[in-house]
Length: 274
Image (cartoon, rainbow, N blue to C red; front, side):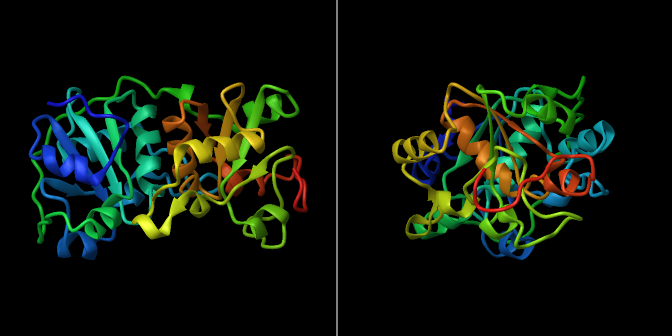
């Protein structure tokens, strides 16, 4: 198997296929997958990687549930996972966070996912796919890629800590309220996830050098430990992915605003400023 980079262009991957010990996971709509998918890929319903229960619906499911999902997909410890979705990297990025959480660090992201693949006119397959099951075991959950609510509270105000809020500006300011309270975590900076994608290039990630500079101006850089969140750690799957690509020490807050905004004891700021 070729040594695949974290961020791989669709055209790059198309030239390499088929690959041994590679599992391409597409988290697109099932109808989209049946209509056209990347050759050799399998489909995964994103809901299977979420706890789905209040107050932290975006948290990880149980280890047993995760083992069942990845065994069903045919994952082995030596498998390199290639992640794709149909929305520019939210679900794919969250899958990478899940893989980090289970200690599986062999993975790549197709820049732009199936949207960019189709835009490039690359070959596809259609129809349902039968997977070859494996027996995947998870020794323990790796918490080094995550922040808990308590850890964020402890770090608030520290100069070497930053929070990237991937929600909309209206959610951030408190104008749009989804949880019990609206607003944002004190000190968090807001850059909505979809702004980081180039809609003219098949939802590929924006130019990385320009993206790094923009984030640096916002206070998100290599000198800080970064927490990223949204409402349920779906949209912040994309920002987690971008942080990984840029080499940041970034961690996902899976509780996200669903948890923070529903806890009357957590500090909240409203308005457009951190």
